Image (cartoon, rainbow, N blue to C red):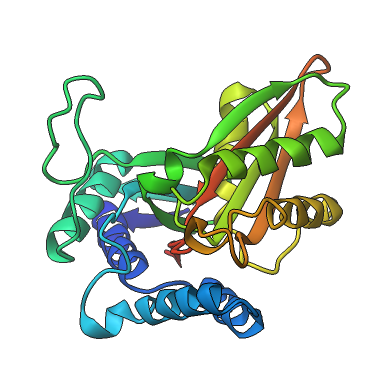
Length: 277
């Protein structure tokens, strides 16, 4: 058994959200640069160049995007960990509170979805926890902007649906979204589980490194990416150039009577950061 003080969680969450909002992950930045180098359309090439320049925002001491997102945290907690000093969720929310204060990040969370009064500190976070083996805690911080979140969709397909139906649904989702989510996109697709869990899978898929395929469904990921890039949405919705940089699929067991599919769209500034305590 290993004891971890709750203030260590708070400090890690604070640092992760500041870092994620200021520094684009290397894999995302490299994918954008590669797209720019391979682009033949001058308008799309210019836009990709501007996007790549914006990825250097941290050097100027400003966040990558003005929408610094709702704080999403995935936590993998080792079963041999003993937390001391308070509640885990409280520690996470305090870390978010400190990050958005100390990092001068926009506070975008309303405490009640209908009354719409700003919470003033960007809490509470959306927190997912999973018990795993070991005596460590892995934290994944994902600040999710809502320009892209609002374009996400979910469908309960018939279990006889084909992979072509899944591809078509994702492509149609992107087509309907148009330029709203600031393409080129990174797309997470969750397949299986229940109505709600397919959406969690889609969100979790956004954490996977660009270039890392699903162990058994790489062909589906590639088929979706090809279909999305044939929609004609293009860079920033201008109808020219690449629409998506990458598609990651996550799957889970499901009921014999259903086939849940969720699509979580992320903009070109797909921000996330991780740490192990």
